[in-house]
Amino acid sequence: MLEVKGISFRYRKGQWLFKDLHLTVKPGEVVGLFGYSGAGKSTMAQIMAGYKEPLEGEIIVDGRTDYDSNAHPVQLVWQHPEKVINPKWRMKKLMTEATVSDPAFLTALGIKEEWLNRYPSELSGGELQRFAIARALASSTKYLIADEMTTMLDAITQAQIWHAVLKLAAQRNIGILAISHDAHLLRRISDRTIDFSGLTSCSGPFD
Amino acid sequence: MNLISSTRNTPLLEVKNFSLTFHSDRKDRQEPLTQVIRQFDITIREGEIMAVVGASGSGKSLLADAILGILPENATCKGMLHYKGEPLTEKRRKHLCGDQIMLIPQSLNALDPLMKTGKQVQTVMKGKGKKDGQRAVFRKVGLPDHVSNQYPFELSGGMARRVLIATAMVSNAHFIIADEATPGIDPHALGEMVTFIKHLAMEGKGVMFITHDIETALQVADKVAVFYAGETVEIANVEDFSGTGETLRHPYTKALWNSLPQNGFVPLEGHQPLADEKGKGCAFQPRCQRATDICLQKQPESRIVKAGMVRCFHA
Image 1 (cartoon, rainbow over the protein chains, first blue to last red):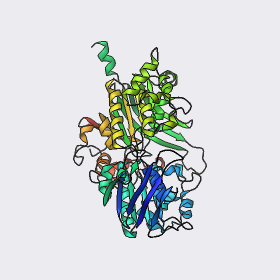
Image 2 (cartoon, one colour):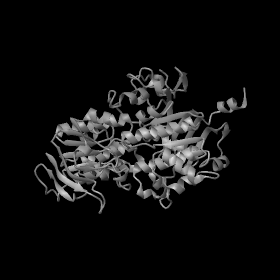
Image 3 (cartoon, rainbow over the protein chains, first blue to last red):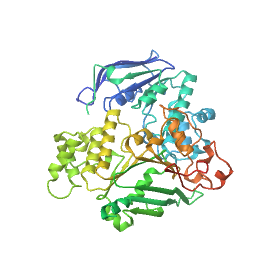
Image 4 (cartoon, rainbow over the protein chains, first blue to last red):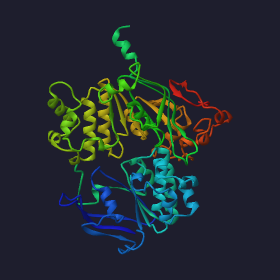
């Protein structure tokens, strides 16, 4: 189980973005999360995936907190793949670094073999996002956080990607936290949906 | 016919058989020329909002750049591009862009980071009473007075979007291009943006609303131009998007509609061809269930079907 236990965060000495936040995701479960822009959803996602340290509280993954030396069991996919992929690497190198090599796995995500020889600038946003997801679903991954993962994509590509991800996650019993403003999407993919403002004693919007 | 109605009949923007080609000098490319937009047609009139909908990589943003004349140097345009009945030449663009023709950009980085927001909005205004006008428009879009004295970095994403919209509202512009101006905002903020853009059209401005989000397009627009692999495959009326898409004309538009989570969430297989993967036939043909021999051999011409435009042999 992925457990967020009473975490708090603020930037520098500013207002608390959230305080004493609790959330759990079970293996194989898809949890949909929605909330106002600027409420702190993405900051929480970054803390869950180990990009940031919470100021209070902790993240417990399958009973452990010591996963520093290996690939993080919680992987985060962001809204803009072009911002997290090295523009000077061909896709092949990107996949090798993440120890992704199984062609069947790439095919399941709709990645074509000929794309492996391309640079990021030679692929569309939807094609790049498939590579970002392939990296995030490396064999050590137990939980996936999809933070507006398909927001920048057209509806057909969105449906293709979610069908593939849900199938792979079910096969490997991966738990998913899907963050989105699209209520229709969350209703379609989630086992349960939650409102971010209900998770914590203090949160935005500070718009 | 009186003078007013005759100018009303001249479209603000008229694009016909427009194509855009990039030439590359990279040695590992087999084809030195890549045609990214072909056979593009669109007409936008005063007070009309035309959505341009398509997948990422379909060429939507390049179209905006072509109208504004900000394409990279290795691009060549062909075909007709008229503004108010006359060709949009380089010389006319210099006078019109930033004045009569305005862009609401996708990126919030478009705001000047070193200028207070109130001042930025005033720069596009003419004549006296700039400060009052700017304050009035801020109230209209729901920005408190003190925001005028703030710099862009002090604003949230939603407030910065309002400043960009306010700029278009106070400007002299007759024609506005909104390029992916609404992604990733919560439903409440989205509803407000939709209202503001509709407001622009009510004042008689023509709006080209570029987006990949068909749901927002249907809330905003009068008509929807559907873009696939650099071509307009259909121009539909908003009412055509209902049920399982029986009234839609092109199989790609139907697939797009039925892939929405609130409809079938059906993932049509395959991918949009890159510019150098297109054959001589219809660009959608490899993914189309209705494709026949003719679709492999020829590009379909545009036709009028049920008061809309379509490029398909089988519509």
